[in-house]
Length: 281
Image (tube, rainbow, N blue to C red; front, top):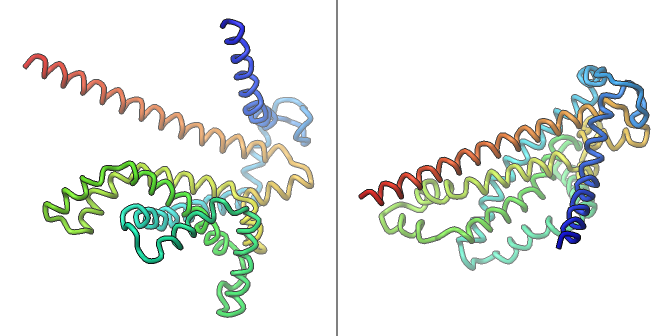
């Protein structure tokens, strides 16, 4: 058993090194004084200052954040409605079509999705003169198209595990359907909606293939800019930008973990107090 434990520990360490070793290397080389991203030339923080003055990278990062925020918000609204329809409306006309439309972006290759959206935008522009050219608007519409599928799946799964008797009890007590939705369903769905929003934001911020098909001149997202720089040679300012993103994400993860741990500790403390009070009574 001891040899097996060592073997499993070794594989666990090797897995962590395989996944996080490149990230650690990138963080280290973000403080590289050399212009070559893979050749160490001494410790320096000049690339963080150079990143702030690189308007091309900053504009691409700002555009990616704007598109991701808008896409995630719209996708959360539409995906929530689709998930509620699939989980609560039973068998209605067009349900199979809606389920297929929700599932298709999850299993369809991104190249096919991007090409089909490109042909759609070209046909719309030729027929209705809208959208006038491809740019941030077309990228946002494309991201909403596939992000809402993930939100719908998350919301539908949450509703499948949620006890419908609570909504039925509220309806029996005289609440109108919209009151049940606002006062009961949506608050219970809030964690799933937040998870769907975060997932959509991440997918939109990380997307390269679909954005490449649906973008136009002057609308370069951060993944597109980084991919274009790969062919010419990356500079340490890209490593600096990636390091900042990693630190921000890690900060949010740590903060959320602390909040959840405090909430769980408070619930456990309240439960012990309630049990102690019941025993005393």
